[in-house]
Image (cartoon, rainbow, N blue to C red; front, side, top):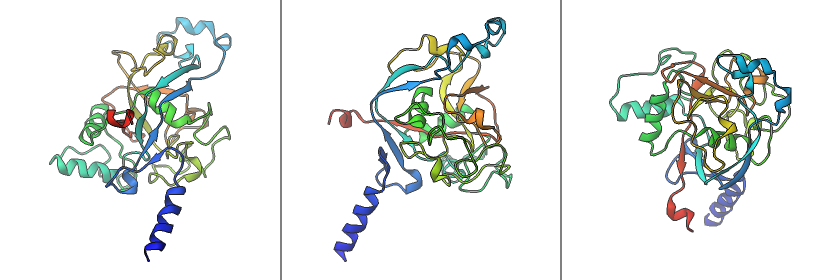
Length: 274
């Protein structure tokens, strides 16, 4: 019997994707993935010469190329949630806080099933949940590295165009789907739903030209702004808007049925020194 258990554990551990790390004492749905320290390419390789000069005079300057230029970023190691935060996760938080302030759509059967990602939460509410878990919201750079993996790919799985077998997008389903049901859409690090389902709050304020002057190591995002970045696209978006370099933003107080989040955690200093 003991031998069978050892063999089973060996098989399970060998099947984990590279970088996987289940948090001790937690269920599989609460697992996190270790993203190793190092460099990656952030942003789009689209040439600045392809951009329309007239865009410079637009008030929001969004057409200047908010995904450009592609640039090298170096990040410290960190953990990131394998799955988007679900309604079941958020319910535990509300119960622990004895809070009756439910997210918008909490009573909508299209969006309130336990395994669906929580929606209708503001940026501050997402941040508060992560803090309660001993975590935090990811920076934009951390989100993109986890999504792009070890290659400058267009989507989490590679450069092949999206379809209904890889993600929830283009209003095919008409609502969110349970987290983690698209294994063929995982990133190189084994993280689910980084494209489609719900767009995800990150820590950064929005500034279109931030890539032109952002620091190379652990970029924290702008100090202030009017909008918060959301990443990954959602169940309504088309293929263009679920690309991993696509940057979108909304007001921090927004309570949308297309926006959710996941959390990250810093690697303990003792682990870094091992």
